[in-house]
Image (cartoon, rainbow, N blue to C red; front, top):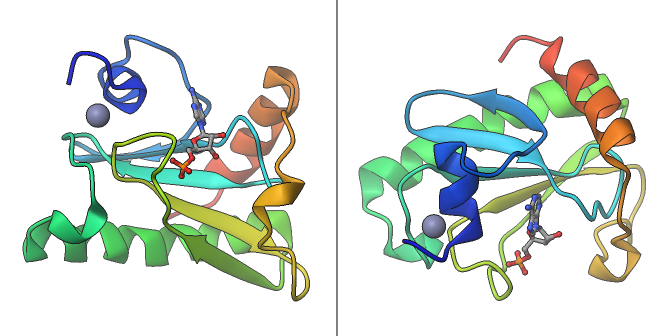
Amino acid sequence: MIHCIFCKIASGAIPCTKVWENKKYLAFLDINPITPGHTLLIPKKHHDYIFDMNDEEYNELMGIAKKLSVKIKKSMNSKKIGMMVEGFLVHHTHIHLIPLQKAGDLNTENAKKESPERLTVIAEKIKAGEI
Ligand code: AMP
Ligand code: ZN
C-alpha cells in the first residue's frame, strides 16, 4: 500500500524504534505512548481490519503478541500488559501492547508524544529480553 505509513515502516522506508521482528511481523514503540513501553505489533504484509486476516496469520500474530507481552511486562516492571486494537488512525493491522500498573491505565487520553531518545532507551531495555 503506497500511502500506508506502517507499510513504509515495515519496508524500512521510514524509521521506527524497533523492539522485535521476524520475516513476517514487526514490533516497534508507539511514538505517542499511553504508558512507557507501549508497543505496536504489525504484520509486515498490509491488512486493514484484523479480523479479516486469515486464521493462520491471525493466530501467528496473536501468538507473537503473547510472547512479546512476557518480554515487555518483565522489562517495564508492569503488573499486566493490556491489549487494544482500534485502527481508525492507521489502517494497517496493529495490536497495541500497553504496560499497565493499575485499572484505568488503558486510556487513550493519556497518550503523549515521547522523545526519540527516550524511546530508544526503552526499546533497548525490551530488546534485552528473549522472546
Ligand atoms: P489507531 O489506528 O487508532 O490504533 O492509532 C494508531 C497508533 O499508531 C497511534 O497510537 C499512533 O501514536 C501510532 N503511530 C502513528 N504513526 C506512528 C509512527 N510513525 N511510529 C510509531 N507509532 C505511530
Ligand atoms: Zn500498510
